[in-house]
Image (cartoon, one colour):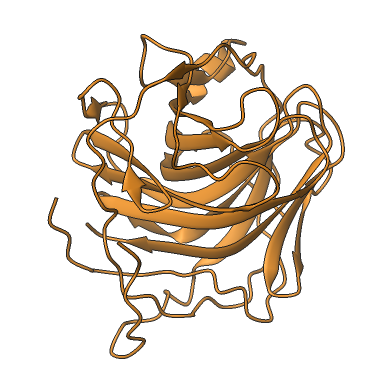
Length: 272
């Protein structure tokens, strides 16, 4: 899959303060199911030229439904001035903030079970995009979730989620977060791979370690990458037509065994 850099927004997390947003009310979350190990036809993740940018954000509420990277930090346009990081809580106490900037990192500190917190880059929308985040689980929890998202809008978003600690460590799944289902009081997380609950991958570094996960949304193809390797289940590329454009971001989950603390050190997004 050939890729050309169009725009990059990287979270080098240099002397910033986090943007704490409002959120929709918490919704039901799925129970972590059993695992099946399948990993086929790996390919290398898209290559991007990364540039440390991003201005200090300001507080803004979340509207209801609304082989390795190359390093050549020159002649690349910076992030748009209006771009800002906004956090919101999907499950848990939506009145609280679980997101902070500390020592050039974004930290998600989820003190209780069943807390799902996200951060999005507001002010920039993409049709086709590849988004990537580097994260480390630091403390706590018998199980965690680390996510990267694309095409986030009032309709929902696409999400790659990996688990690195607990009974489901080493597994991943992709979801379509459906705001329409949330409004109906249903579980808004729809699996993009309908035939299985979660997939094991040897590319995930388990435990309290560093992982880089990426999600490519190009046309109707949704492709997951874990530590530079594309994940292909059952020789099939996942497709979905619900979302065509939106924002990018990342998130973390404590599931039903919390608490958990995760540090996010780098984020990049670019047009494929």
